[in-house]
Image (cartoon, rainbow, N blue to C red; front, side):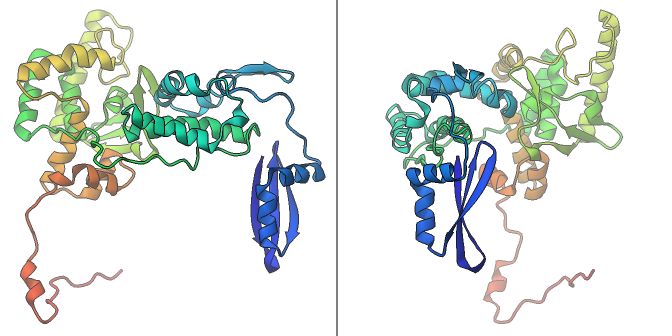
Length: 392
């Protein structure tokens, strides 16, 4: 059940109640305080439901564990939040992370609580307990978001009055360490690293070159298909992501984008395609693999196997400090920004939702040299503009 208070014409206050897909309204009058009292007090809400002939919820209230994993009552079998809402609404990676949060943190504490007995105070005390366990504020926030998603659905299903996790704030302790800072390759390190991949593991050399030249996330790289490559216009269409072995959509709406290819990358991918065609004939594959980067049997690459068997090996041979494949993306951003490319342009091609994220992450690599004449501030008159205004 949800209750909303609104003011209509001539300062008349109304209470709107939604329950089981039905929506009813009740005029309170010009007394604003009374309208909010009706909305807030549970007894008043129950009275309003009876007056409006809205059906009360049948069946018993499930426990938190039951609501998550499924339960049975006199209404029948309920699949549970994880097998219904989460299955349809959450990405595979998010759902997998939420399962871990549930099994390790939420179910052991709240599993036997009836859903309607979970209060804001309990949620708040629960989140602060994690700081005592030395979890970062980011980790605590992710756990709370999982909790909130479940309680929000419980509120929509009218098992509890509201989402009691919604307004619980997760503080960030003073002096808490930052997330891992980018560790980009320099120009020389990138060239050295690529050369070693070309020499030692030629199959994955095009993948590494593409990562350094486009800034795609590793899941986006693994999800590329030949139909996404426009060799004539030198464009890659990013529209797919592979996470935990599952094919899914890009991370955000802004992540679905077009990214330009360098001339060198075009040449590398054309040669790579020719090698794959030759491998198809040699191994007797029935058709050309649809994936751009493939393993020895023509399927898309397993991320864990690639990192453990090839990436770490080449890092060790290179003598460079430890990096992850995501640092190819950081390298793309920092090399472009350091040479003066537009922040907005780099942000868009990386698939960031806004330039603020790009700036906060990579501001240290922006050019430091001044390109304007600061002494103009000493002049007593306005400097003459060297550019005429443009008119449409």
